[in-house]
Image (cartoon, rainbow, N blue to C red; front, side, top):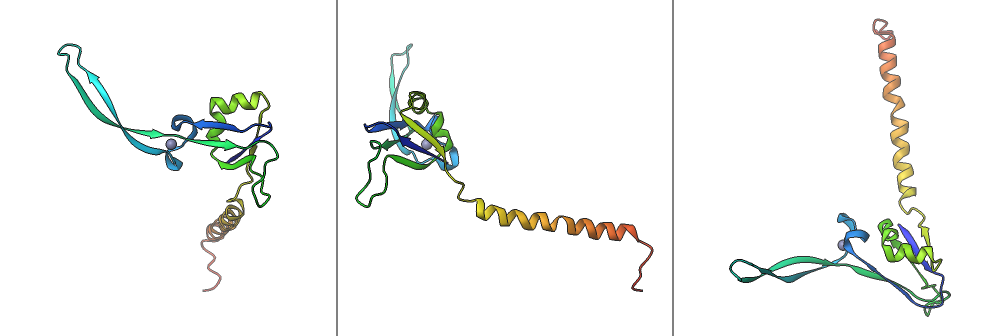
Length: 143
Ligand SMILES: [Zn+2]
C-alpha cells in the first residue's frame, strides 16, 4: 500500500483505470453494462449486445496543507494499491514533483512476525527429534 501526497497549492485528481490501478482480488470498480453495436458489413445488420465493463475510480488530493474540520490532513490519501504508482498520470505528476509517493507502514507486519516465529521455532524440533532417533536407533536406553 502507498500514500499519495499533494505538494502543490491546487487540487489534484487522478483517474485510476482498472487495467492499471486494480488487482483482481482488490478491485473496487463499479460494474456497468454497456451496449455495443456490432455492424455486419456484408448484410448491413446492426445488433446491440451488452458488454460488462468496469468503471475505474479516482483519487482526489486537496492542496498541500489542507486539513478537515478535525485537523486531519486531507492533502494525502493512504491505503492505495501499489499499482496506483504505475498510472501514467501519477508517474507524470511525480516526475514534475507535484506529488510525493510514500510506501505505507505495513499493517500486517506485527501479525506476520509472531506467525513466522512459531514456524521457525517448530522447524528445529522435528529436526532434533529425527536426528536423535537416527543417531541412536539401536540404543533404546529406556527399555
Ligand atoms: Zn478495478
